[in-house]
Length: 440
Image (cartoon, rainbow, N blue to C red; front, side):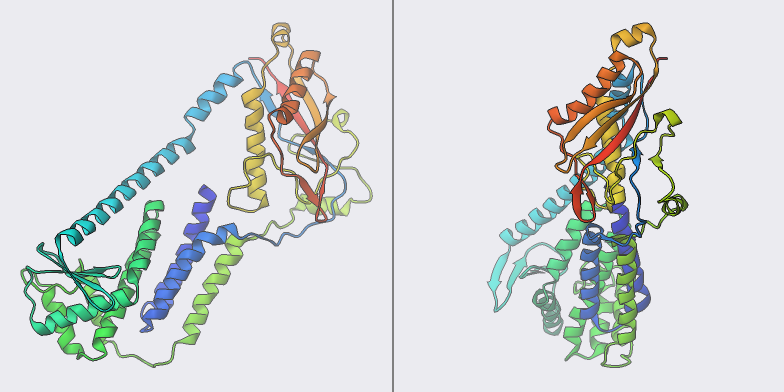
C-alpha cells in the first residue's frame, strides 16, 4: 500500500512539474486539460503495469535458505502485542478517518446542491436547465444545471456573459473532471499533489469558458467585468469563489498575445518525455545483478553454492536444490502493487508471521532447557502445495516434531503458494528454513 502511494505520488509529481514548466502558459487550454486528466489517471494505474527488465544470470541448482526464525517462551504473546500496536494499523486508522471526513463533506455538498435545486425555480433550455434560487451566491454550473441567484441584480449584458460563461462549462462537461478530482482528493486527502491538480484543472476550465465568451466579446470589456466583480459589495458574480491570484491569472491569460495558432509541438513532445521517465521508473523493474550474482555466474561449472541469508556451516549443507527464476511466494501478497521482488519480500514476511502465530515451544524441551537451531527442508510444488518436509538438522525429538507440524499446517489450512517458475514453466522449488529454539 505504501509502495503504491509513493509510486503514484512520484508519477503525479513528475507529470505536474512538466505541466508547470512546459504547458501552463500555453493557450491550447483543451490540450492542457486533456494532459492533466490523462496524467492524473495514468499515475493511478502505472504502478500496476509491471515489465521485467531484470538481467538474469544462468544460475545453477542451489539450496535456498530462508531467514532464521527465533522461537522463545513468549513468542505468541509478543507477536499478538506487536500486531495490535503495529504502526501500519495506526496509519490505516488515520487514513480511514481522513477518508470518512472527505466523504461526509462530499455528501453534504451534494445535499446542499439538491436543496438549492429543490427550492429553486427550474427553466428547461435546449441543453441545460436554469435554476433560479432565492439564496445569495455566485452563478455556477453543476452537470447540466446552471444555478443563478434572483437576489443578484445583473445588467442585461452582464447576465448574457454569465450565461455564456457557465454554459461553456456545461457544454465541455467540466463537472466530470471536478467529480474525478474530488473523489481522488478523498482517497488521497494526505497528498497535496491532488489539490494542485484540482487548482490546475479549475484554471483550465475557466480559461476555456473565458475563451468561449471572448470569441465575440472585446477583451477589455470582459476583463473589466471580471475586475469589477472581484470588488467587495458589488452584486455581479461571474467567477465562482475566486481568489485574487486566480483572477489575475485569467486576466493575464486573456491579455497575453498568442504566439501562433499552431500547437507548440516541441513543448508537448518534451512533456511526453515525462511519461517515459515515469514509465521507466515505476513500471519497469530494474533489479541489476549484484556482485554476488556475478560471482555465482563465474563459478557455475566449478562449485556447489548456497544462497542464504542464514549462514550455514559445512555440516548444514545438503545436496544442491533448484532455485527458480521466479521463486515461490507465500499466499497473501499477490494483490499488492510492485514488482516480483516487492511481492517476494512481502511473502517472506507473511511466512514468518504465520510461523510465529502458530509455533509453540515444546513443554518437554522447555523443561529440559533444550535450545538450538533446527533446519527443515520442504518443497513448494508446482501446484503451490507443500510436500516432503524433512529435518536437515535436529535439535530434539520434540522440537523437530513441532517444526514439521508447522510446515504441514500450511496444507491443513489450505494455504496455496504461488508456484515457482523457470523457463516459463511451473516447477518444484525446495526451501530450507532454520528455526532457532532459544530460552531466556
